[in-house]
Amino acid sequence: TEIYTTNGTPGTAGTAVKTNAKYANSVETVDNNKRGNRENTDSINQRRRVKRSAIDTTKFAQNYDRKVLSGSVTNTGFSVSDPDYPSGMWIDPDKSHYSYEWVQTYYGNQIVLSTNRTGDGIVYVTELSPSNKVFKQYTLNQNTKVPSAVFDRITYYNDTYYAMVESLRDPLAVKYFASKYDTGYYNKLSYMVPKLITQTTYFVDKDGKQITDSNGNPVVPYTQKGLVGQKYTTSPILINGYYATASSNSNGVMSPYGEIGASYVKDFHDGIVVTYTQTGSDGTMSASIAQDGKVLKTYTNIKPSDPVIKYPVGYTTVAIKNPYIPQTSDIKYVYRKLGNWVVSNPDGSTKSIIYPNDPIDPTKIADSSVPGYPVIDFLPGYTPKDHMGTPLVPVDPDDRTKGYIPPIPSDIGKDTTITYTADTQKATVTYVVEGTGTVLHTDNLEGKSGEPIDYSTVAKLAELKALGYDLVT
Image (cartoon, rainbow, N blue to C red; front, side, top):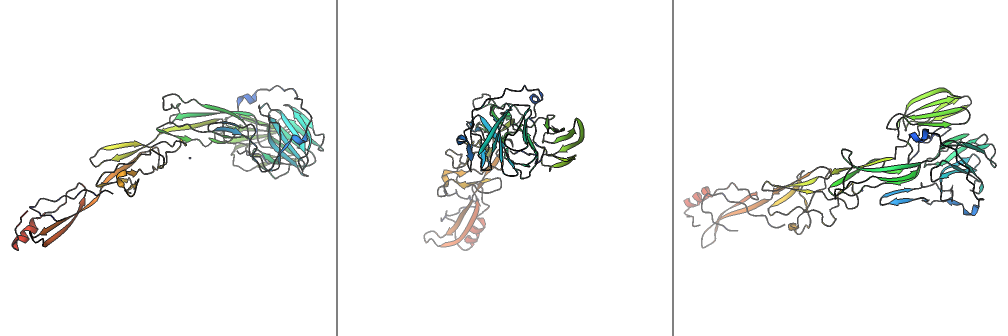
């Protein structure tokens, strides 16, 4: 643009152009143990034997590469379901029974243990051929034992929430127990009979206090029940302006452990008794080995990840393995306030825009593709930049007046600053001869939007005057 300067007043740059269980089982004679709560220390009366109808082998189900989810319970993100049983495992077809252990003899015969889904401690033993043909089934109330009528020199014991299979002839191997496998063969295998666990999920603030929803109402805890070894899921609820942080046990496998000081006693019915006691919140346990009431050895500070400890007792080797699985009875979702995009305007004012909740996952903020996602305003002559100085991406590259997409926060609980930076503008000062339009001189200038340019016409006008040119306008 051609302009005439009149004096030494500095010029000004122009305006910008529009632009979201394992069980540590022992592998030999000792391993998993009783539930760690006080109710387990009380005596439990023996229940009556349950009469069962004759076995019809045509009704029994086998599991070949399919998920068995009998007894599944769901409620908007909360669920309890049976494990993913291994291929080839025989599953008790009685819907009121929960199959939890699969044992195989050295020569291929099968033994499957089940219990009632009520968690009453009754054990059902099913003996099968290598091809899973049912031979016989036994019902064991608590504190009873039954010798096998089919397999030579095998006896089944059901103590108080502990069942043991003893084989004095063919060694035994565990093929499945709560998703844990073992390829070794042993003469005694003792594992916990699954109990019914009450699991409570709490929704709290950063101080551990009960959170309130968007309407100011307290969010009550959610309770569900499941048997040890079953899978479970939990889910946070959506509270506008807050995001949830899930605890590490928000999903997993039902565990009976967690109470410090709780003891778990395994009786091998040959005078040997192993007692585990939880001593740390991380699952650390101590273990003592006793024979005929006399303590032979005590191990302390056994971590869940520690390898098996083998201790010889006469002709028997006792294997000690911390059975702890992270507790699953107490689950917390902690809610914290979402951060804001804090926009610094050219006039010095600021504007805060809270991060939007993800409509599906309360642990995240929404994706920018969600309808109604916040937009940073377009200001002529300015470009919004994040705290690293990176320009924001326009909503529409062909039309910057539609605004900009705010940056993704590195921490959704902290604020993210956005600052408008003045764009670089260019100006041209041209000295021309009136009438002819002859250009005598041109100066190209640069500056920032809204900022003065340090430029004066005085020197150039004096120079032109000396050449015989007078300023007209």
